[in-house]
Length: 270
Image (tube, rainbow, N blue to C red; front, side, top):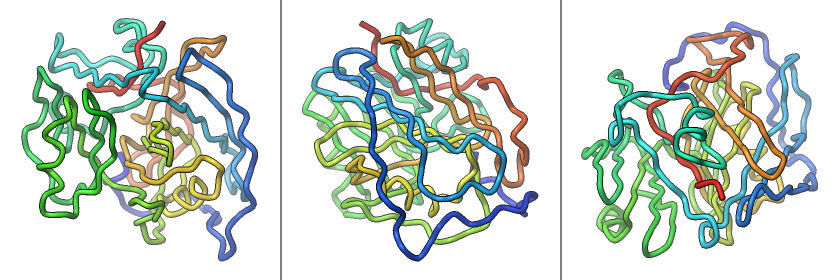
């Protein structure tokens, strides 16, 4: 994913601008109760002949509870997001987070009420998604008691922070860029799965996400490059998306199939 890095191999015009780009209307399509899907043409000009659209799934967790599905708690076998949807009866699935060389363990702390995937917190990862049974939150982990406050939640997933509450991007400009899968929360407590095949730098993508009428207040990175995945199946939507470009790893747009991944966040299909 995007923490592997080196020299950018393509000439890419920076998308970021001094003035914020104009807002775009978002048209939502119902996938099932509590789950909506939209495709957004972001503001700015894409410098490469790569699909620049953002795919966004918006989830009301009070109507469509989140699930964290981990291979290590099942048969140990990674699957594509599409296969996870089929095997676990999910309407939507996105990467749960980056994973270690064993192709099983999340790079940050990760557990459910019945299975501990990674018992160790990663100091440089400053974001945690926690949900059930007391609600849902995306917590910033800067405070001394931040981890302790998450103990009442059934599921806790730690990842690299992109946007700090309230709605502040934390990435500086850089040359490295990649296809991106991220998970965000909005001001109403809804969860957003956001996918971009176009290889943005993270500051560029943060600026775009915050410029759109999505109400995002916090966001975490869950995977980049060819591993980045999003599947949506329901309400007439039937898509399986994957990333490709990643600086220093896969500097092309040629990947056209989802890669097997060990862990996903999703919503059960009705």
